[in-house]
Length: 294
Image (tube, rainbow, N blue to C red; front, top):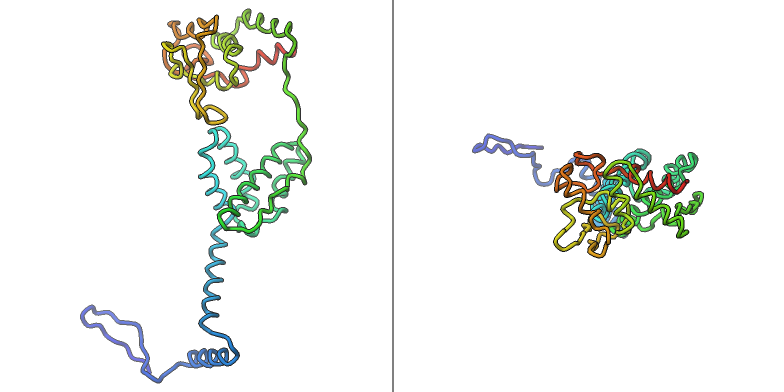
């Protein structure tokens, strides 16, 4: 028989308790099962621990989806990337990978899942994109392996199942006479003010076009004749210092700043006078591409 204890001080009822010596039918059955297991050499308490551990492992597996692990990897890895590259990887993850198998436990991801994502890209001729997505999946799975979520990285070597990337050399001028003609064409260029000086400065500093295109006046110390490119804009994430005292035409770098058209702060190579926005990548290299084609 069951009885209930009334807590008069709080006016609440505790859970029912049973009188000694009374066991419901279900409890007697479990008691008998435990005795039978002990007779057969099995420890019921160990079995309960194993069942509980299996339930915890199953729950953890469901929580460790590919998307959850990928977002954890991206949070720790994105700080080493440029903003542009980080956004590109994020687009690959959210637009291409997560919709296909992002909700799948990372331990259950198979090579066929990754191929399901990259095959349509390959069929459209986007071979390099397919390889990049395949490599991205491999990086996430390698992170899962290092952090103990999986034992094997199924993305290793998977790019060999794709069409190889055909390397293509970029156009370049290697003949001295052609280089001289290019420099004369730059001097005679009558385009936008900023493009003109962008083209004149580039042969003297030999930086990547983007490093000069995105340069600001705050990076240049005119007293020391030094241009310091911040580490965040460099590919190898190391600051680069470029002295320009030796440049015979250093007036090229100072002319825009002294002009009343441009402020002393902001981008050096503005896309148009008076606008605080750098040149676009296409506009800054269009002149060089046209000259090379000629």
